[in-house]
Amino acid sequence: MSTALILASGSATRARLLAQVGLPFEPHPARVDEAAIRAALAAEGAPPRDIADALAEAKARKAAGRHPGRLVLGSDQVLVLVGEILSKPESREDAAAQLARLSGQTHELLSAAVLYEDSAPVWRHITRARLTMHALTPEEIEAYLARTWPGTADSVGGYKIEEEGLALFSDITGDHATILGLPLLPLLSYLRLRGRFPA
Image 1 (cartoon, rainbow, N blue to C red):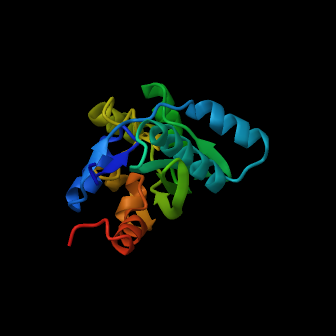
Image 2 (cartoon, rainbow, N blue to C red):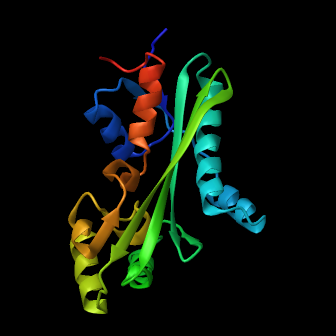
Image 3 (spheres, one colour):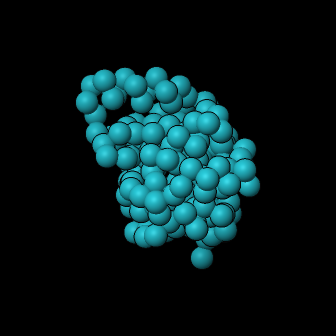
């Protein structure tokens, strides 16, 4: 049986992060109703970190059912602005509205990961990054989206920090992988303890 990690995500960014550190993995995206999970937990008053964790676990749990005996990684990220969770923009207009709300403000990115093995969670972790955006004019926002949309459509907040979006920020606290959506360093530390990371 293969010892490669199962990545329960269709995120090209997460796949690229795992590949860059030489971790053997197989991508098997798990489709879950993220909007329904998020709405249900928000209605119960769950804090953003619990929502991120629940979304990551839902993906890991679903994929684990299809891959018995394998180590399965589920991961998700939420953007929090003054206590409110923002979702991925549904249109260029929505992206412009999100960037306008983030302009001049500090927001948080919470990246969660959950590992499942034999249909049970064996590890979970959440990391946090804080990002402060320059005060942007409507013209700057439109110019940015003219250059980057629809490439940023799959990114909450309407920006990609690994590309031109980095220039939108005046201050960033947190590691790069967290900002990209995966608590990579804690994950690698756990896998190394398990003897699952190549020397």
